[in-house]
Image 1: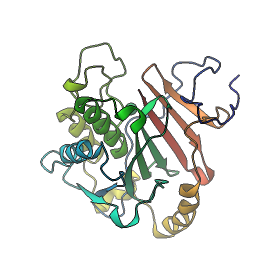
Image 2: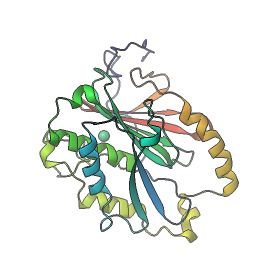
Image 3: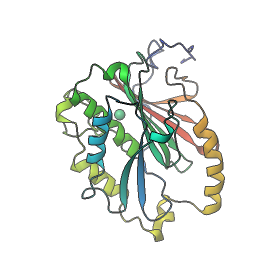
Image 4: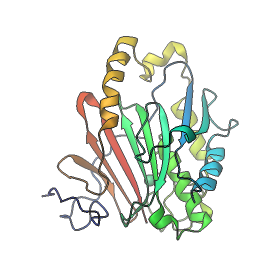
Amino acid sequence: MPTTRPTRNRTPRPTRNRTPIPKVVPTIGGHDKWIMKEDRLHLIFLDNLSKDSLWRDALNYSFKNWSNPHLLPNIVTMSLYPMSTNLDQDCPPIPDKIVVCDDDYGSTKWKGVNLMYLNEDTRIVASLVKFNNFYGHDMDAEEKLYTCCHELGHGIGLRHWDEDFANQDLYNCMDYTNNHENNMFPDQSNFQALRDMYKGVSRRNLKAVGTTMDKEKERLLRRDLDKYLSQSIDLNTIDLEVWKVIETSDHDEVYQRRLDNGYSIRASFLLA
Ligand SMILES: [Zn+2]
């Protein structure tokens, strides 16, 4: 049985040395939608990267690719803002935002991770993207761009397109690949998925598709959200008593854990 492992800085990849577990346990569905308050979704990315970050070019370029107004669903827009005035090294999640950070997190075995916070309706309410400079320093521009595009894709709510690293490239960054140069950008199929997810969403049928909630319910959940977002998540130690394994391979690990009131966190690691 999986057991809790002690926290050590050198304890890198969460599953190393643990009892073998099934490669795949039942997944929890397809792509994930962001919560919407009105009849539009404005996704805000916050650049909380370190000064002179080696990821900034990749972030700017990947954001430009993902935010293409000609390809996004017509109710979705995206913005990227710097967090220059309030740089927080702890990289806390912020409601309704995708916060992007980097640091030298050590030999964690992951080069990028997305933490997705979901409410009881499994709508995304906050998202964090972290890049590990421990590996980033040795990456070429292509690998950084692939990694950044991939993690932003998770931040937006997309899952993997393909989980076989060895097969033919799909030429989009949600593909698993060893050929970074072929998969550095989102492609038409990624945007088609987004258009399908947000198709036909209007003020009138928001409730029907479950992307919004009534004001009182929102007020109560907002009250609790700060509490959940302030919980520190130790990415060096994944306690398998509380984290459910969604998928693992030599190249990625995805876990999900429940919080109170139906909230949950999903952590998607892209391994170095
Ligand atoms: Zn991934």
